[in-house]
Structure formats: C-alpha cells, structure tokens
Image (cartoon, rainbow, N blue to C red; front, side, top):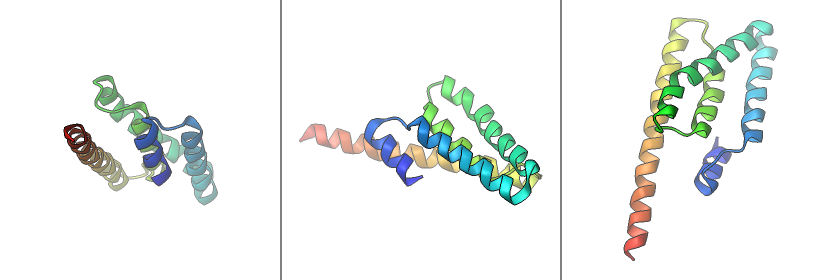
Length: 116
C-alpha cells in the first residue's frame, strides 16, 4: 500500500504491474487458505468494489488507480456473510475519506507554495 501511495503522489498513477501483483497475491492467499471457494470469494470482493466505485469514476471523483487499489483490499475481505459486506462498504468509505483528506492537504501545500 505504501508503495502505491508513494507512486500515486509522485507520478499521479499506479502501475498496472503493482496492481496485478496485488490481485495475484490476494487470489493465491485465499486459494491457499480456502481453495477454489476462497478464490471465488476474493473475486467477488474485487468485483464488488469495482461495481460500487465505477460510477464515482465516471463522475471523475476517483481515478482508475484508486479503484484498482480498493479492489485489491476488498479482495482480502471476502463476501461470505453480511458482516464482511459491511466491512467492505466501511473500508471503501474510509478509503475515500482518507484520500479526500490527503488531497486537501496536497492542495493547501501547493497553494502555499505558489504564494511564496
């Protein structure tokens, strides 16, 4: 996650290689833990975040890299019961709020830098 944040702040994009590595790690982790059922649950978690966040992307509220990163983390939180679904939604809300806070600090920093 830290690598993705640094990459995003530096170049305003997250490399697809990093996202692919993350998704393969999530799928292999759950595949090792629960077999094919774990892989399917992880894929559902990944799909869930993409479906939820894609309208925000279309409104230019999020970038594609943000959606890709969120999909990796929601892949870790499987959707086998309602509690996990709530965890996925809570994670997405917290991630969006933290991203907004980071963006506000970045705007303030750039604004103050222009004043000097």
